[in-house]
Image (cartoon, rainbow, N blue to C red; front, side, top):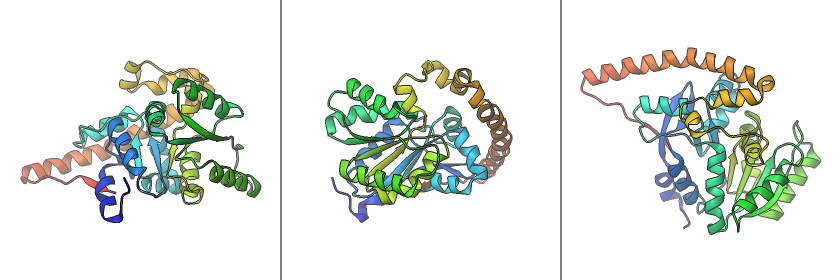
Length: 280
């Protein structure tokens, strides 16, 4: 289905939750997959972010990251705290869209739909290993290219190589497996230049699907404790991200929630309801 401009806003408008100035999409896994399938007929380029506490807190001091998150087609809640805040604001359908699970679900759909995929990111050898792992897990999946970037900005020659390779491969979905804020800023910068319908930032999904990192049980995820499970696997690199950022997040989000509660109480007493924020 090709979407014209008159139906575009109706198809992709969805409610958002303001979390410390970051617009989180009030979506769940099924709704996000549904929007992606609609997007494939839009003949435009866009990107999807998966944002949790770390991304929200990084955006407090990095305006370019906040801008990248807020301009995404979908800025999905990657973390139970994001969903809990959405529930408190009345978005009961909002639920976590975990990057590795979203990648697996979309690859499963793609095997039947014929979507072509490209893998950008990971340490040397990881993208190639991920290609093999996903093609083995999802027979019929088309992964048409991989690119392992350096741990710095691309040089002009490297950028040209990437643009030419992607142009020749003609993927429908380009997965970006970098850390936050690198992947979000990369997508915002290159979305209009790569000519790919959809870019998706999935962070450590490359390492999870290749077995370099071990996923946590579902009950740990639903309890909002996956950060602790990851911290135990890589404490040297992640201790500051999780312990420091989590404490800062609680300190900053509490006043926002208290103010929202007072605002809702005032409107309830006045017999009014406050509308949800919606953007295309």
